[in-house]
Length: 356
Ligand SMILES: *[C@@H]1O[C@H](CO)[C@@H](O)[C@H](O)[C@H]1NC(C)=O
Ligand SMILES: *[C@@H]1O[C@H](CO)[C@@H](O)[C@H](O)[C@H]1NC(C)=O
Ligand SMILES: *[C@@H]1O[C@H](CO)[C@@H](O)[C@H](O)[C@H]1NC(C)=O
Ligand SMILES: *[C@@H]1O[C@H](CO)[C@@H](O)[C@H](O)[C@H]1NC(C)=O
Ligand SMILES: *[C@@H]1O[C@H](CO)[C@@H](O)[C@H](O)[C@H]1NC(C)=O
Image 1 (cartoon, helix red, strand yellow):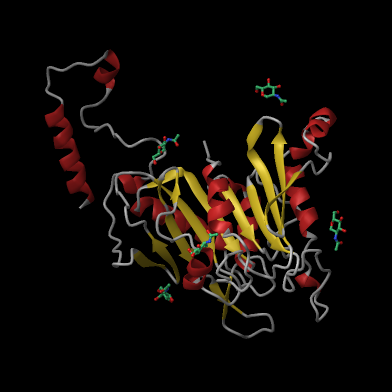
Image 2: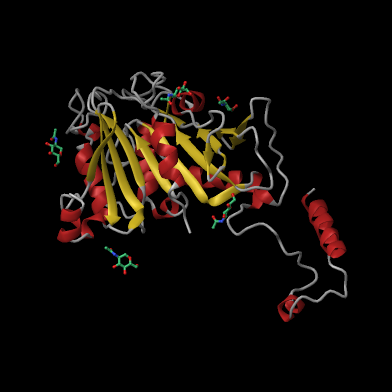
């Protein structure tokens, strides 16, 4: 199938270029056996090779990869020759791909990144022991209840490879997001050099930042754009942090979310703006955030890393009265807010950040 397509492309190229046409000397050095590709550099292999994936009439495909699976949604206007942005969204503890699609809404009709429909992907976590042991509950790496020995970083890399090979994606526009345990895993992806350089920006929501998901030696290798949401009424992962869970288990310790965001701002080099710049923008030095109130009950601390640089920023949304939820007006994940985090803030943030 693949070689057939390649032969077809070769013969098309041969037909398009009559032998007497000589463009420049550089063209002479190109072997006639190598068909030049018209695909832009940021187009994945899936833009030039056929896919065996079949999508149903709701534009979904459930892809199995070894003992794992991921749910893929392509936009209604998916064009196999145009690179599309990819958003991966990781579910929370005890939930699954379908539920994550519902609460995050990345498959909603008409959403775009870079003016094109989005390929939205919802992987399923591996079954772990649960919070009290010996149960069969889905989770991601980095939590006390994760399946022992499962390398979800490698799984994510393999999944993105499969997506790149089978769909026409824009490799400068891969994004990672997740809720709770999936938000913690999103943070781990941001801390890991191989995946910090694979995804352009990260959206951990109500993130469960246990030590395994928020390593003290977080060294992404580049400034990483982060957009983070957390409710002040979150009882599962309290905004102020905790030293242990209600049963005294210290492996359930999570950080103060303000300090977590500040750590990212510092790591990204945001503290390097001068005192003068900070004063001019009404910044506080150290955690030099610009403070605003974009939605009811919501404070946004934005940390641009220099007066010039909109690339590496840390945006922290603190939502009063919100519990352990993905902010949505419909309360799709429990808490009701006056805004949809996905469309109001996450997608515009992703749109502003690309790799390369
Ligand atoms: C996808 O298929 C796997 C394996 O059959 C199954 O466990 C999983 O629940 C399916 N996911 C969805 C979203 O249908
Ligand atoms: C990448 O692909 C898109 C098409 O989706 C195009 O608009 C964009 O200019 C390309 N180049 C870069 C560097 O992103
Ligand atoms: C969280 O950290 C911030 C900044 O250091 C501090 O002002 C706040 O009191 C802390 N909250 C709790 C509950 O410790
Ligand atoms: C902004 O960027 C330019 C060019 O890189 C640099 O010369 C200038 O000093 C920067 N300004 C500030 C305020 O960082
Ligand atoms: C939030 O999303 C829901 C579901 O798509 C939609 O019905 C609602 O109008 C949206 N709210 C806002 C404020 O955009």
